[in-house]
Image 1 (cartoon, rainbow, N blue to C red):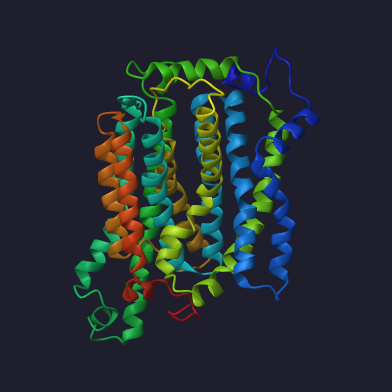
Image 2: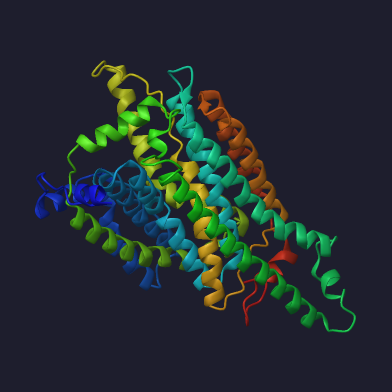
Length: 442
């Protein structure tokens, strides 16, 4: 513990100045120019004369630089905290936008859209992002390596997280074979339909709250095992089967000098979270008229479109980097870099954290806020998650990956996007997510 504190305070080393840190934060990415859109997006939200699509677009673009800044803060804090704790912080910061959107949707009682967004975020982090990383990273190398112990642990955690969502759906199918509310409400001949429905809703809320607590305990236990496995002074980096390049990365982190001061980083992080949260709320406010005036279904909006908000920053950087490298390669302005043997699979950790930590947190927060949010997802969404879980576990089971496996993940994500476009949701399940005074259509 003392060693970690000394590293955090850079004992015996030179600290970065405040003004230098601020300059580095403001110039860390070309996407920071979009920060200028934040006040414009706020003005557009309060200017009721503007079209809803303008407000949505401005808020969408304004969120992008904040997501990129969270990633930058996480990378810098790794230099102060080490790779293991730093990776956990980076994963948490990369989930901040999605978690904020989830809490806002919960607050506004858009519970069905919230469920679809949770499904979409997990699918994005399981299929699209690692698929793109495996596809591009493995293009010039036979195969890339994953940490064997980490991959095996992820298989178990991911499977349990998805199966936890399967349990309420299976329970619902068992008590209502036709998947219709009338058959459930008419099952109790001594009570009215509304009373029976309230009783069943209460059962699913109790089940969801219990599952949320268990999932949280499992996530905390997994982080303890990951950061402090059995054996004195052991961690995942000292594991005998850990890839050599992963150990080299930790050594480089210990030797590198940070670009920004740790306290400035923490202060700017708090400010960015507040600004991003307000902008995300304006973004959610513009969703309802967008859904009502377009052919986009609520399910496609939540599963496919909203999760892209969290990926937009990385996607924009990746596209810009691709074109820059392509032009320099065509003009022979740079020598090609040697391919890395270490596969990038951090996005799978993002999906696991969202399943085992943020989804339970939102569920328990809904309990505290008296919102009837439960973990009874409709069968289509549960099927998507089960399919993604199976494919990801199959691709990473040998702790190695290649470009064709990445392409397979991308293709399956494209299949999901295509099928979801025509999916209109399960009305019966939506009945369980209606807040008091709210209609099913809302």
